[in-house]
Image (cartoon, rainbow, N blue to C red; front, side, top):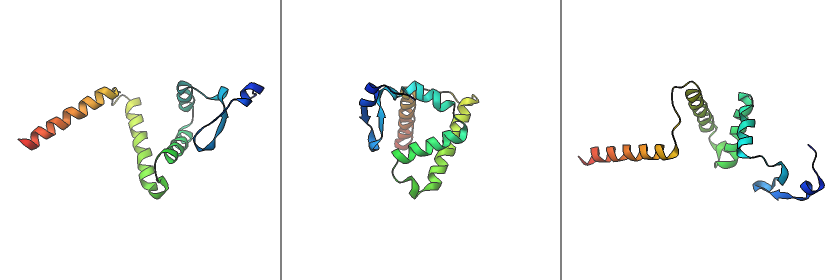
Length: 109
């Protein structure tokens, strides 16, 4: 990749000290598109990296990390194969609240 002098001057400090020219920062849609083009093993590696950087102490419990990755894969397959459907965050919260209210009513009956 070639950068102009202006692009090289416009560096941003990202968390962890990573420095990248502003002009090369991808959009979320570009990232998603690129990630979907990766091989499964590459996506797994990326997921592990993201989890390591965002979750406390994954190296302390590698079996949990592996189980989480397997669960993500299972859910992705279920979605891709039509066994489940996507719902919005608001729908998920409403459903969870409804179930909590039902459970609460059962316990108070």
